[in-house]
Length: 178
Image 1 (cartoon, rainbow, N blue to C red):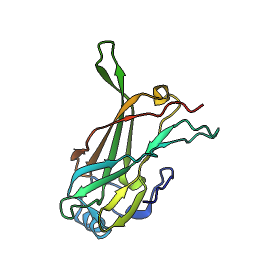
Image 2: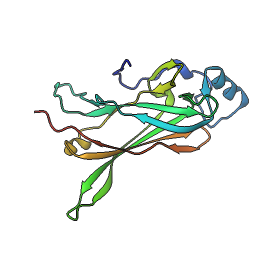
Image 3: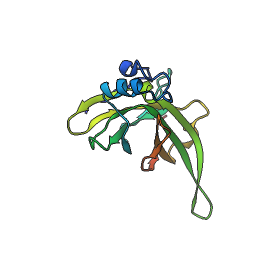
Image 4: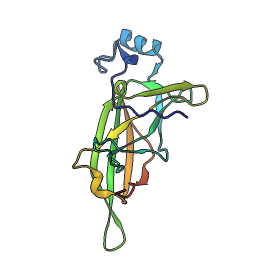
């Protein structure tokens, strides 16, 4: 699979009918459907590749300042990944170890983007369409958690307001490389 490393850009895939996702007029829905957008999403599947951790800083250090991954919004009608009108919400939680051996789940960063702002991956007959978010954290972000476990939660919120949550993923932020 070809991996794209690009910042968030607004793509032209949703030029008309997306300005107000709450509008819901028949014309808007017909325009979206004619462009391949589906409104029957039932599942969110996220894939986190081995090279997901990304360095975005100008200094060129190898320490990650964010990550990228692949999201499939599965359609009832096609049983494959589909393009959809709505928002992708991603939360990152720090799994703070406690003295008793348990872990405290603490929200450290959240992102929300309209699907038109997220790079799309090419259609495949086997998997359908997918999105490839590339998420950065600021200097106050999870950098203090190098080498620690974080939990990633991905949700899709449709234009109608339906929220579908994908499976939670526990990952380890790479250690500092300096």
